[in-house]
Image (spheres, rainbow, N blue to C red):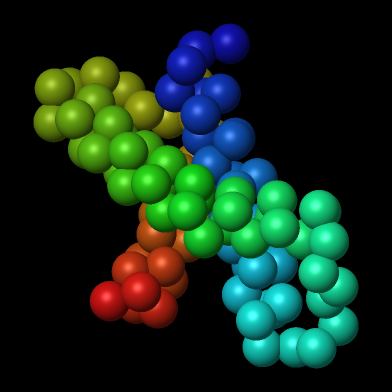
Length: 92
């Protein structure tokens, strides 16, 4: 598996943790435990950094003329970029 495809999938998992962390801050259903702290760290710290890195990586591959779509499905690329826009709207 190519590194771009692998990290795109990891970014999607971290984006799922971002949604869970976002909901945990607003809804009182979450317990304070080891699992929730892991979700919060993956969601609030790792997902933002990884999405920015992936966005730059996609952009550089696009500018250099390398195809992004074959190793990474288009829906995955679009989902990661939509999460990045959502995260930037929340944190900025």
